[in-house]
Image (cartoon, rainbow, N blue to C red; front, side, top):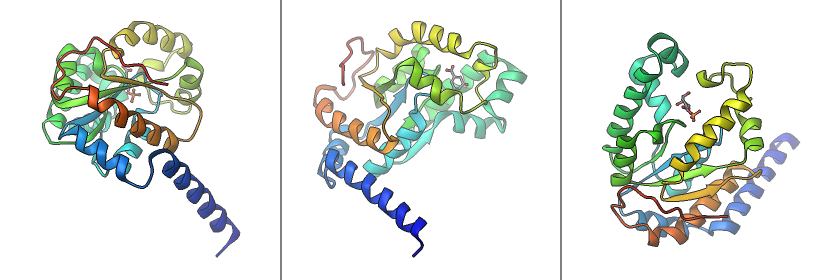
Length: 223
Ligand code: S3P
């Protein structure tokens, strides 16, 4: 075995042991799945916060399927999100987004990462409230900017001051994200650790989130 492979294995093992330190060897994940009682987990929050990368890891730890709403929209349209915005405009994208999320939520239990604007739609919020537990993945603006600047594919950020766009979006959207069933504040550790911490939080909170919660107004703070 090469030393690079050794190093890689060591990092993997350390990651695994940190996850095990947080959620043990399986009982917490099993309990969370049981408490979900067939409901999906839906990640909402500002673009760049890590809904897809963290959502995928949460799904893996819970042995659930992961779906990314933007990817589903792109597949359905056979166009990228940027191309949809460019060719047909944002309202067309939002209609597609609403339909895709409704369809995906009808396909059984899964972990779903939504695009940053999806939860602004009252119909979408209602479908989510009926079929899922919603989780607002929040973070401070500096962490969001660090991540958002890595990818140039977000149509709403194609202008000279993306930080101002994100600040304005956070100001108008955060009160709506706050309607989610629970909130997790991300921080600067690996996505695997964030995923494990989210499962740990869900283990504590799910008992408080009724099966068909309807529109939520109260926010359960975490971290
Ligand atoms: C959007 C966020 C994007 C994507 C689209 C619009 C938004 O998804 O849906 O560019 O309105 O915030 P991510 O949050 O996954 O980047």
